[in-house]
Image 1 (tube, rainbow, N blue to C red):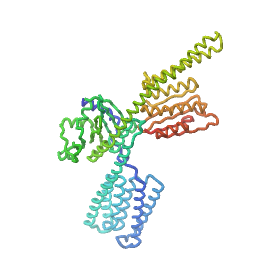
Image 2: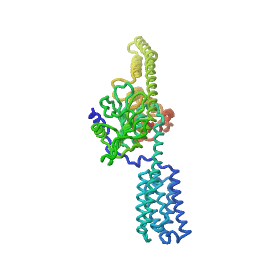
Image 3: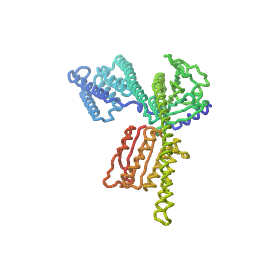
Image 4: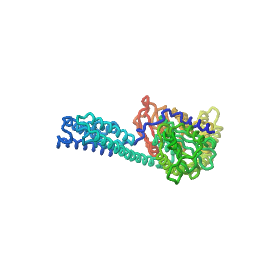
Length: 579
């Protein structure tokens, strides 16, 4: 069974050929107010250094002519960066700016006395700015680069090299710089954590259902931790099968998947106790026996300890994921059980990551259970409403048409043979029979929740039926084109049906087009709808407009509507609904 489970997970992960997103891509955009402060402080430091040179040109080792070139240029450089930031040039937000600052600081140290320069603390400004904007790793790299540039500037300076002063200053820059980088990176990490908690705690749109909410949380967690995949195993109380959901690093937008698995198949993934959060992070120290590769934290106990686990079982589980490290935390479900795995093929996850992941699931999954309850209530209400509508269709709506057809048959029997009315009566009888058949089919569809004998989603079946009706009665040929994986929740599908139906009706009422096209697409981020009519088909006096009813429905779902030109000059109404 463990082999079966491994094959299943390997199949889910085979789409991911590039295992790790760039860490920089996961960082939040810099706050514009913070950038204004940083760029302003850079200019202030540059102006202060220049004023020091002007006030006391012979002091602090600034007697060389090079200082009169470097310091004014640094003032000009800082002012230009501040102007570019004011006009929102994006390149000034990149990390290259901080590396340029390191070299500027090196030049200032070089031209103001080398190892004896009083301006070596300028390096701390660069370290602080880079760490608070780019994280602890970037701050540490800037710290090492600052030390190297400080040594280089001191060595090539024309002043006598004082090794003791240089060693003291370099050590001071390295020690204090690393502390600044650490606390700056921690501040950035806290901002990212708060942003993630805010996003995953927001109430999901009930129209999108529980599946969308869970998929969104898994993907956000995967991106936050820089993981290659997130795997969720859960089962509601009394359910026969487990659900396995994944979020993969798939840049095509099709990384998510849901599978049904048996008790035996998920057994290797559910070996841990329901109170245990587990971290697998092997290192060099763990390989030589100085630190554990497997660590566990029990709910209610603050300390982590070595996980006592059978060697064969632990090796099998590590081989199952084939990852550098992973975290497994239990789900705090009121009815049911499950675990969430965050798997990284490149980064080494930490105990802090495991604690934060446990905090996320504690915060979010009770909310998901509430959404699931609401979804079941809404689905039950929708089912009862369908039964009522089906009975009403049969008892009230269909009966008058049956009576009309009987009346038409009786009237036809009274018409003399050869009368020109016979053909028209036959046409009316056929039309009434078609309407009765359609109503019966509709009642069956409403009662059962979907038509039988169709492999495609009910939404597409209903839209094709509407298109057939338009072609039959009005001669307008509308083609329905959709993705192969176009599947929506019942409530969102009902909204999309109303939008598309209104769009097709607008083609009939407001244009002279005899052909049209409806394109439907769905990915992990949005549902896209394009309703097109043939080029040059607008009726005189009817310029392109945004249909009010479509716009209202789209806005209620948080979407947008645009009217433009499609391929070939056709008029297209494009609707985007975020999911």
